[in-house]
Amino acid sequence: MNVPAVVAVAGWELRLAVRGRLVMGTALTFTVVCVLATLLGLRSVSSLGLAGVGPGTGALINLAILFPPLMGITLGANSLSSARERSLLPLMLVQPLSRLDHVCGVVLGLVGAVWLTIGFGFGASALLLARVAGTSDVSGLLAIVGSALGVGVVSVAIGVAISALAGSRLQALGVSMGLWFLFAFAIDLVLAGVAAAVHLGPFGLFVGVLLNPLEAGRILMVLASGADALTLGPFGAYLNNTVGTAAAAMAVCASLAGWTVLSLLVAWAGIARREP
Amino acid sequence: MMRTHRLRPAEDAKLLEIHGVAKAFGEHVVLDDVSIQLEKGDIALLVGANGSGKSTLLRCVGGLTSFEGTVRVLGADPRTAAGQGLIGYLPQLVALPQSVTVGEVIAFFARLRKVKVRRPEELAKALPLPDGFLPSLELPIGALSGGMRRRVALCVALLGSPPLVLLDEPAASLDEEHSASLWETLQALRSAGGTALIAMPLLVTSLLRHDLATVADRAVLLEQGRVVHDGPVQSLRPAPALGTHRPTSVGTR
Image (cartoon, one colour):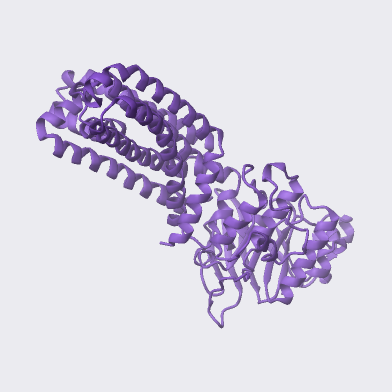
């Protein structure tokens, strides 16, 4: 791998992303809602600490599961498809770097943009929490942030994979939004609805969790932060009760890693096979 | 000081060998048994009407599309050659991002091509183009006219002085002054041993009056995906019976 070229492409993509309206708008919105969620939970935090505030922590986790992944998958979906439509992709691919270098650079750059957004949002929350919560709560918040960063990587990788395969930018954006909705809401609702009816069983639920990177990320955040077990949700609670916290955390981490690697491979195959 | 990263290609290989290249989109044949060879220092024009296959042939040489047949750039297949920095390419249409400046665009591609400069001002000097060809480095791309953006893209194609430059309608949107600068640059490129394959949507009568006719060594005339002429530009003659629009060739290589 041509590391300097990957770094150059990553820097280029990051620069383009942070100057775009999508990143600025999402970062601003995410920061505002994080601050609002934190303010709402501050009263309980002051008396119980971060780990004791189920609703407040749950709100932050849900925000981290909805906003950055939406931004990541949208940025990723826009990346190669937009460059292809503007003939920028052919110009990039005749440069001295491989297709894999290019894909890795794009993913890294966009991950940087998503991480900045997460940093702004949770940074503001951390500043507020620091006034009332004890230092022992910092680890819980860091756990949520760390998990959110991981979910950000997955969402960007999935978006870039969609971008590599899509016929147009519009198609890529449409598919990415649909997939985000599926991951964020639909899979949980469908699984919860059909689990009993079709006798999905423990293994079926386990697979259901692993097939949804956002659910896996949410469970990881809850497990890592030690927040209220109720926020684990039915699949997370099942996983936690069945295999224990450490094994459950490893399983969802493996799920996130698997989604990332698979998406990168799909993106690489797509850009190598398709004409730019 | 500028330093360009040059690779050591196969010593005895021809600069560009295109042999029996064919390409079709479904039933529509775009290139049919195209064979061209370029030596070091050749400036060759690829001329023909719209849809004759010029851009597709350049994309084949750049490793950007699949094809039947053989293409070798200094003995390497197109993708390998591009990966080694042997090819500079200007697409027919390219929309550079509007939120970056000219300097940022040039600096980014210079970094990819390992063209090292100490200060941003040296970027302009790293290019084999006359002073003033590249718009001001501080200007954002979004503030440039179409012709100025084309000049930036041309500079990207020529960065690092790659051995083979593929230019797809390079003079599109350029005014006369900058077109003349471009032709001068191509002459300088040839003097330095560089090679260029330039696609122009010119018919024979237009080509013979064009400034490029004095710059280029050869004209390769494409008609419906086939090479119908490959020889010196001045050996081309317009078809008298059809007035001035249909290209006819005299003599083939």
